[in-house]
Image 1: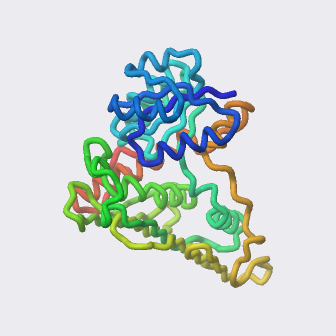
Image 2: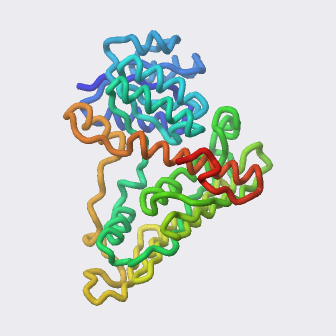
Image 3: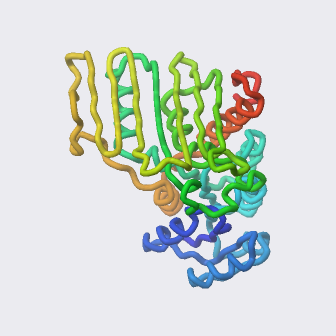
Length: 332
């Protein structure tokens, strides 16, 4: 049995994570901390767990093996360093932190403590994205020239996200810092080292942070990624397009089509579900299994840091209204 503490209900996914943990059968949520005490107490009551008003007290508890971090992104570095120094395994909602330097602090603490770390990258567990990686690894797309990903919803348009979601001091940004994480980490996984980036962020609903955003990134292999995200688009089907010199993969919603000029390609035309790679367990499930069974841990410190590097540089490009070379941004 894995004993877990929930650190904050700030993130909109926090309650879903708690319910998922309770459904696994091998996890007990023992305690809750929240930077808003009343919210934390109410949540602890709902979960049948103890509420700890003091984070250090929670991290000293012997019935806490690991923590799930859903605190404001601006608090991630301090919370996770404290958790690692207390010897607690860490699962965190994206983004890992607001800056690469904060990610480095977390990484140093985690490695020194020898605890397990996982960041929530659910798009990397999905069949269509696994197919894209498989096609690339098998050489069926040739050299990649263009990646386009769209991810959006109407949370800001129709006001179903909490208003604190638009507090830049807490969240670090808007649409790109939230939904934009998914296109960002997929691009990093598929295309490798970024070279330069431009950003166009807009404020359709007039809030302090952007609610409509697009980044263009050139990667080391000269592939270009067009990454689009929005909190003001209605019923937005996710879109994923991967173009290479010898093949093209188009995914829209649940439908996928592959075209290749390779005569030895095992795939052509519409892709049936049985031709897709098997969906992997959710990152949170893999974190639990990795701790209990001493197995490999997916989506680790390096993955989280690469995402933050992309995000941090994207916001520099937006603020300074210029194309930013990653060599000049303080990134790797």
